[in-house]
View 1 (cartoon, rainbow, N blue to C red):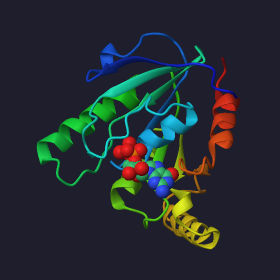
View 2: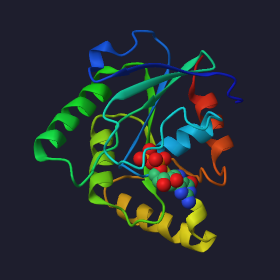
View 3: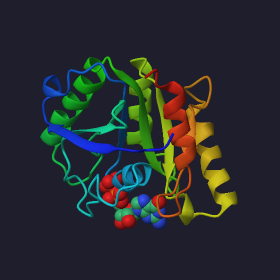
View 4: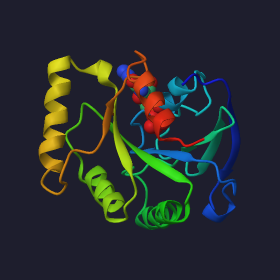
Length: 197
Ligand code: GDP
């Protein structure tokens, strides 16, 4: 798929106000600073469609972008930011739970994890939650340029080992780097293949 158009549509803090259109959507989520904005900018060939913040925890809204006038790319807030208070975490959980429970047009979530880090409880818990709620997702490993191929392999294997303790098989995954434009074609192809429009 070539991305010919990418338009910002709306930001919401209320799931019920998200676009009513029955357009397929794909949601991107991960811990703050994982490289989500950079990945969205890479996918859409824009320098700053999603803002790369440098200020983790700042973007707390659901952002809808219309791509090629046929599908929504949804930028969800980053989670697991240590400096966020307990009550803010609760509000966030409610918000995300509502988003995933209510958006019938959601085709798949993409859970972003930094390829350099060992599996983190917050990411694993989130994947388990998605699984328990039958919400399809793929893992996107980010910042692959930071590791040598062997180390990438090792990190994916440690993810696989941990996930296979609870999952029957390793979820679908992509290895990406926004700075080196790795994984872009594969991701767009996947979206093309799963998007009925
Ligand atoms: P977000 O908070 O998840 O939206 O993350 P950002 O996209 O703002 O990126 C956080 C930091 O990681 C920034 O300093 C980016 O320059 C850096 N970053 C993001 N993607 C990559 C990548 O693919 N490779 C490298 N080396 N750095 C990246």
